[in-house]
Amino acid sequence: MDEPALITSAQRGDLDAFNTLVLNYQNMVFNTALRILGDEDQAADASQEAFISAFRAIASYRGGSFKAWLLRTVTNACYDELRRQKRRPTTPLEPETADGEEMDSPRWMADSSMTPEQKIDADELEHALQHCLAALPPEFRAVVVMADIEGLDYSEVASAARIPLGTVKSRLARARLRLRECLQNFTELLPAAFRLQGETQP
Amino acid sequence: MNFRDIELLSAYLDGQVSPSDSARLEARLKSDPEMGLALQSLRESRGLLRQLPHRRAPRNFTLTRAMVGLKPPLPRVYPVFRFATALAAILFVFSFTTNQVSQLAASAPVPAFGLGGSGGGGGGDGSGFATEVPMLEMAPAATEPAVAAPTMEAAVLDPAADSNRVATEESTAQKNGDEATLPTRAHFMFSSAWLMGLALVIVIGVAGMFLLPTLAARKWRAK
Image 1 (tube, rainbow over the protein chains, first blue to last red):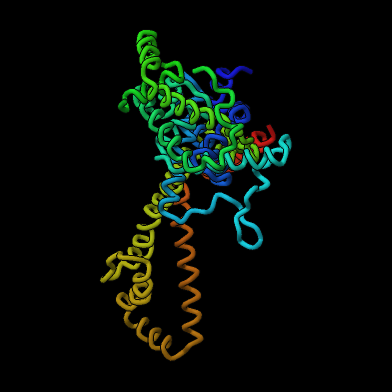
Image 2 (cartoon, rainbow over the protein chains, first blue to last red):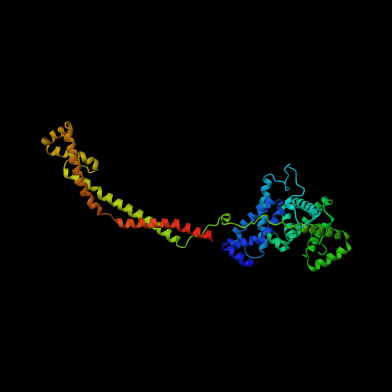
């Protein structure tokens, strides 16, 4: 069944149709939540909350990019989670060993397709980027995650974040600038191989 | 170079600049090395973000009916059962109450005329059965003082005679009561068959209101 038909069925209360949409989008939703929140467990909780909210609110969906509509739901769930974190102490990003020390290369970040050296490089890059993303204000973070990580175009980001197109451009520029400044502190950590890889044309 | 230039460079990087702005920017990029460096810097930032690995969801986020609080739809006949039961209950209460009231109304004057009135003695105010019983005792005393006086005296002195007298009065009262009850039954507004029918509708309706959603929920969960 195609996406519009699934959405129409879900709007009529068909949970199976909605679950098909969930399976199609769950990786994107989880990944967005992970990059905004920086913690896998919290991202999973936010994703689940987002899908529950999305099902309850799907009657209000009036066409347009369903992906953007879904991302709006997940960013709202992430903002809620961030507000909760402000009220309560946060948990560390990295898992700890039995001795209570942070694991440098946690198993959950492992990718079996990489050599150990590549894995270390990738982990370090991810660590540095996640650190810099976490330093951004939440609204800037959401825009940069949607545009640069999830690959949404400006109009989709504007729709998902409910902000004008001009604000998307402005926030994205500021976020990229701040990220660049932040990443200057990790120059020695960033493997040269990751720089400008695949980046030749605008 | 100001923030407006950075914003323009960032949009240019994503191809979100109009052709005229793009041409102007490219001309500036050729003449201004600082702008070229800024563009390179933004491109690096974007490139690094694009390098981030895409994480797979650790589990499926599919929803269950319990998660979203979905309830099984009620069967179409459910409102009919509900309406019929409510109507039957109202009619039952009305009929039953009417019968009770009419029975009370019919039975209330009977003792006043049957007992107090036949005595013909003074002091009968017809205020109730309880007050009429002593009047039965006193009535003969008023009309036949010569006979009544020893009887009352004997009743006080002789317990056996007293018990005989009470039994006689009870049988008299019962007789009178029967006479009073027979016409009262005839005054029931609603027959017992009608009440039984209503009660049956209520029982069936309540059972239906309980069973229909249960069966519908079972069928719905099995889907």
